[in-house]
Amino acid sequence: MNLLTLYKKESSISGNLVLTMALISGTFQGLILGIITNAASAGTKDSWYIKYLFMFAISFAIAVIGKRHALTESTRIAEVVISKIRVRIADKIRDSELLFLENIGKSEIYTLITQNTNLISESVVVIINACQSGIVLIFCLFYLGYLSKLAFFTTVIAISAGIFSFILHQKEIDSELRETTLKETKFFELLYNTLDGFKELKMNRKKSDDYFGFLKIVADETEKLKVRTGFRFVTEIMFSQVFFYTLLAIIVFLLPKFDYISGSILIKVTTAVLFIIGPANMVVSAIPLISRANIAVENIYSLEKRLDEASKPYKVETPIPVRKITSFETIDFENLNFSYLDANNTPLFTLGPLNLSVKQGETIFIVGGNGSGKSSLMKLLAGLYYPASGNIILDGSTQINKITYPAYRELFSVIFGDFHLFDKLYGLDDIDEEQVFQLLKVMQLDKKTEFIDRGFTNINLSTGQRKRLAMIVALLEKRPICLFDEWAADQDPIFREFFYTTLLQQMKKDGKTVIAVSHDDRYFKFADRIIKMEYGKFVEVL
Image (cartoon, rainbow, N blue to C red; front, side, top):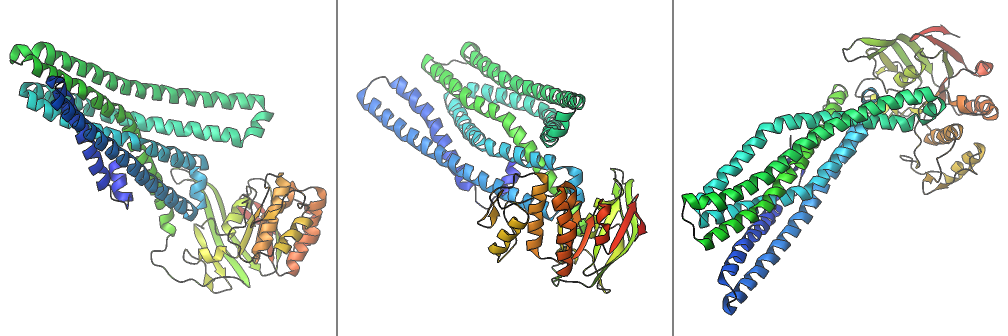
């Protein structure tokens, strides 16, 4: 996969006009060579002087206008393509599965999308310049052929040898570029973790130094790879410089020995070769960026393929209408099993077999030690993880499967331990602003943030305050089941008590079903049932 394939596949805008304008611009830029050399030979005769000046002005104007149009239009096409790809991948990310995203990591996805699309965007102008320079180069070769067939064949053979030499090393260069991309992605992942784990690193100097040492090793390895690849490109560029000046020396000093060329023709041939050097260097200088852009295209399509493959087992091939599930009487979990797998599909941790019946309006507390599987259970119950085996039965008759999972998830409002708080109330219609203001007041957040234009003015709050804001959003969603993963853990004693004695009781009165992970044994009396977990299994139900 390369840039040309990308634009053919993704662009709905024809690039024919861009190519035409680049061709016209390159052709007239090449004509300038002939005009200048002939004008120089003609001397200062008024009639010829004015004629060549007029031709130069017209050719120059057409070359500039054509190049400007080619560059602006190609930039527009490139940005349309990049926007299309970014939006499509964002859509696939939101439709992908949680387990896949947890395995691949947010930093890798973010780096692949941003770094690679930016590289493609930056390459457009350079590529169009290189294409136009290539056209100028071809025109100059034809002009050279018109002046001297021997000079023409000498130049063509020399350029062909240079191209062959480049192609010979291109596979090796591409391989190093791929390796560099992988290593650089690893570095950005470590940098992301430095920001994400700043508090932990700040609190432990030895841990911070050890982590930074590893980051520096990856940075040094990345540096060596980039320097090595850069040296290869520098060698290619320097080779082209030496190559063309050697060619110039051959034409000026050796060619007249084998073929009679008059002084005036030799001057024109020399001028043509000198004129070739600029466009040729432009083409050679563009090669590194084009190579990197081609690798970027590969990376983007590779990510998209991984997203497609991860989602494929759960996709519904034909659109089947599914009734909206807004309420329930019972949900039964029958022999549910789920496992985290390593790269060789070996189970690392297994949840199940689990059997559980949840009735509408119940309050259930899930308890257990760290690593017992409580958070994994919550994701399984909410439909974010698919069971490896077992069934989820709604109201005694409807089996939840890949067709009904999207509707099943609409039953739940969830606040996980690693929850994300959006600044706007997306997906909520007909918001009762008075209710929002009242909830902000109840949660003692009315002095911390305001609700304006369907969003909160400030979400940079403490963890406990952000959880209270997330609770407001959950209540506004008005869904029948609420899942809370240790919501009260980050609250002060007053709000912890408020959660158990007031909020949960109000939810029960409103007919909501609450399943909450909790360690607050002094409040267990407010639960209808308490389920204890150990090693991924239910060991006690009270």
